[in-house]
Length: 158
Image (cartoon, rainbow, N blue to C red):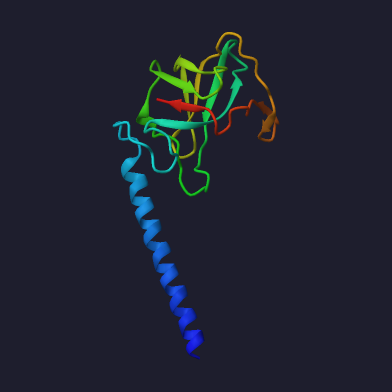
């Protein structure tokens, strides 16, 4: 019986440590996000105001424009990492980096798309000269093509 009692104690202690670690990580994540001070975001590991690129695709109705999308959730799926709707607006500039110069540069926002939570999900801007889309994925019931070449690699900074 003593062996079973010790096992239960160890399980309870382990659960308590995990709970404390979770609370500490969650509080750091929310206090460091989007404060504009240049600090590192505890969830994405990127500088505050920067987000991981999800995909890009051409705007079918406007030649020369593309949508650049932000990954919606952290790698664990536990945090919504997209910026609030007030983070930027049409006419402002943003940068894309870490794409081996294919998409790297500064762009002007011509439109914004908001997800179901009201957060910025995609940014419309011009297609950089010479960029060739690599449609290597599809999305939705219609099978809309997407360029996922820089998924999780590219960085969007507002």
